[in-house]
Image (cartoon, rainbow, N blue to C red; front, top):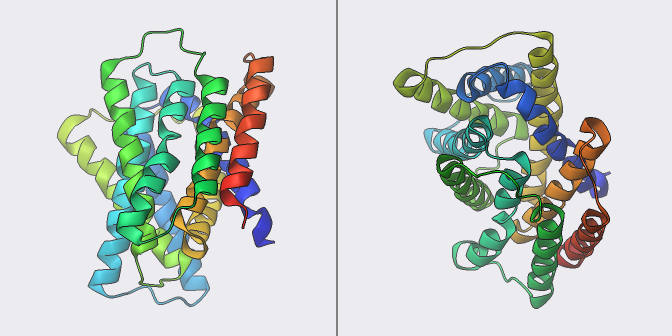
Length: 282
């Protein structure tokens, strides 16, 4: 069962890009994210109680998980949502954050003392080339400077969050770890709202459907799988699967949103798949 987790993760995580636009069309990005992670934190709290997990943990373990959530749910998702809300093309945002495996591979050696093989570097290179073929030629609109900066911040945040999560040795149950991380993301976005934002949410049918998808399929599903993969695999191998996200998102956009999907996209998807296979196989 665990062997199919990466494929389930890819499908669920990619689908999040499809539902981000309808969410920010009906709310500001930070109100949407604070709402999302308040529900996610409460959901993991209920599950932890139901499964008799110890809710109260040491201050050290709590703040380690909390800080990971600030990086991942706060800076990463906040940066992506904000950039798209001010006009950054979704495909470009996806391509930029896809550089994460490159940074993770470069930093996992000095930070985690992981050995990154030539095979893994070759897989990363092919993955980047494939992702670039799928999305790199879609640049047709002006990229807002603030959106570019926010997306780069998101890239750095998800990279360091992955390394930080792998470095932790608290061995908390996934539900407790995810609860604390969701709480960190929720409070981060609430702070942004208090300091900078005039919050609003239109609870339309479109918003509710898109938000429900991101809460249940992405936050409860995909993120839990990601934490499992990080805990049980090397950081460099785990993040290599992220190279499939842009190509899969582009395919979903073609399937559900009638966006174009060219032969060049298909070639890029194939190259990316080969790269991920090379980088992640034992």
